Image 1 (tube, rainbow, N blue to C red):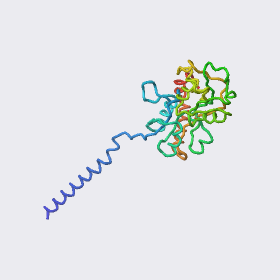
Image 2 (cartoon, helix red, strand yellow; image 1 turned 180 degrees about the horizontal axis):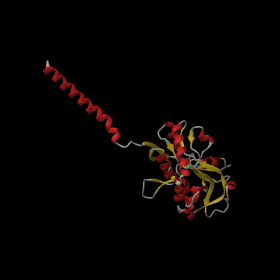
Image 3 (cartoon, rainbow, N blue to C red; image 1 turned 45 degrees about the vertical axis):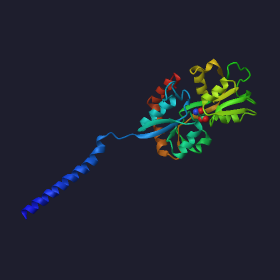
Image 4 (cartoon, helix red, strand yellow; image 1 turned 180 degrees about the vertical axis):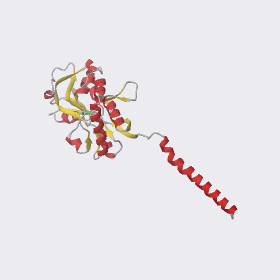
Length: 262
Ligand code: GLN
């Protein structure tokens, strides 16, 4: 009887130890590792310096928007991963849930607001006309009628071009191709965002063949787009943007790409 009792106790102890071993391991393991940051799938269209572009000889994306979304994502507790696609593919990708965020110098418009949600504005832009530097007949938007215009597909520039009476509009996949069309004489003017046109003339070698003319057409504001109804992410990005404006992060990034604090 006593032997049996001892044996039973031994079995009970062994089972208890085994269970403690397995259970304990399972529970202890995750607490030893740092919690993994959630991934924020960001997409852009990188022919839009200084907002997003690839440095020569590098596949890496760089620019104001890239620095901004990395800073905001980090503030909101995400690991940011950036991929690229055509500008006109960004909104469909958000709608399909293939990406979480689009940042691409994207103007907040009423039309886009019907299908995606935007953060608070993060940059003020507007459209401008770019012509060949020897062109002295086009002096602004009012002179574009019946002209050959090059634009990037799906942009506010393209929309504006289609409003010009008699204009022959060619929409290119990238902004760089639209500008090349001006260089080669296939187009007489490009409609582009002011900061991008200015950067191209000052830094991208554009001043060798191009110039901007006339006034900036109506103010546009850039926003970061998320899938319609993704309130959690929208709130997190808006909070991070407000924090970045308060704590100097935004100004630092602005200085990097535009030379002076906003
Ligand atoms: N701001 C313009 C738009 O939203 C152009 C953007 C771009 O070409 N990346 O349509």
